[in-house]
Every structure is written in C-alpha cells, then in structure tokens.
Length: 273
Ligand code: MLT
Image (cartoon, rainbow, N blue to C red):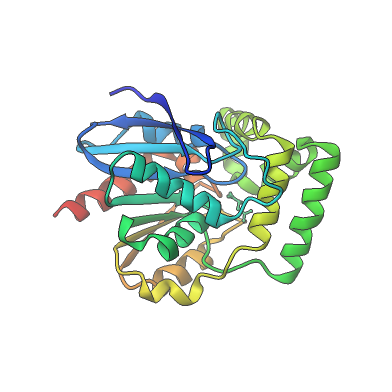
C-alpha cells in the first residue's frame, strides 16, 4: 500500500494528520518524529516497510500538515495524548511505538499515561533524562529568539549538530532534505515546543519498570544524544538490545536507512516469534 495522507480530529478539536504504509491489516508500528521535524523524516521507513507490518506516522500538532491549537507551550504530555488519540481513532489496542529523539521523550510520556497501548518500543537517538538547568535556560532563551527572529538561524545552528560529518560531506541530499523538513516548522510551534522540552519530566527512574521489549538505536556519531546515553538506557531497561549505526549522527533513519531498517526488521520479527 502506498503511503496516503489522512486526518482525524483530536479530543480538543484540533485536526491532526498521519500517513500510513505497509499492509493495512498488519501489526501496527507507530513512528513519532523528532523536533523540529514532521512525519516526512520517516520517508525511508514508509517506503520500505517490514512485511506484515502497518506503519503509521503522524504529524505532531503544529508540525507538517497537522493544525496547531495556539498553545504557547507544547508539552510531551500533549503530544503523547495526541498519539494515543490517533491509536484510539484507528481502533488500535496495542502497537509497537518508535520515536526519534523528542519522539522518544513523547513515548516516555505515553508509557506513563497509556502503558497498555505499548507492546514494544523503538527508542532512537533519545534519552530518558530531563534537561539540566543550563539546557533549560538555553531552550527558553532560544524560544524567545525564534519568536522574535524566525527559525532560520536556529536551523543553521542545528544542522551540523544533527548530522554526522560524513553525512554532510558525502550525502548532501540528506542534509538538504532535513533542512527542508525543519524549514517547514513555524516559529510559533518551534518556540512552544522548546518550552515544552524544557519542562519535560525525567523518565530515568521509570526505565526499569518498562515491561515491554525495546530496541535502542543510536548513530555512532550522534552528538546530541551520544551512544553513551543509549548504553545507559539499554542497561536500565529490563529487556533491551542496542544497535549502534556507523556513519550516522542524530538521524540514523535518514542518514543510514538500510542499517536502520535492518535493525527495526530484526527487532520486529523477533517480537512476532
Ligand atoms: C530532537 O531531535 O527531537 C531534538 O534534538 C530533541 C532535543 O532537542 O532534545
């Protein structure tokens, strides 16, 4: 099935959008994008789906073609409730959820709020910890700057941190694709999300209560959530395997899609057994 754009109305009336691909009656895999991206970041995973799986990728509120509801703070809880509302709308009682970076923070919120929805986890380039006081202050200052000046310089600053040096050198199309995805985000959504990121809860202590199997993926050259963080998370989870993707930074699903997709396929097929 080709990927198609769909819409539904969240409980607060906001119109949200998602795309799906793969087999419609397959087991659901719901992919939650990072910040400040949208569901297009999952292009390689929507193009090459794992046989027997239905891949669903929402645009979080305020991103892609999903509406914003004018919030000045977009919290991980709000995003998690939207993801759960999409699952409910689709009649999905439990799914494997994958999240990259902020997508992972959202999954930690989902685990707190609707744990029974989660049958397995793919945590890519993310961390369980909250922001330090310094990181929080930087986020809040950046939110003000983005509101005043727009997102252009914020994006310029992010690109070198997001992608491995090799990706920027050898795969300029990936850098251009990611830049395009980020440029589609509005200043209002970016600022509101920065405030929400700053106030997110620390999920570290809850890791060893997670009852479902997890795949932890990390780009070997990720500077934002480095492999050391991924190792800590893997050790703290009860049932987790770690896959480190060579030649990738913070966005391995786009930088090295074949290696990323192989890791996901092997995790999903082990779940079916
Ligand atoms: C992301 O990729 O979602 C962001 O880097 C998350 C963050 O800024 O902590």
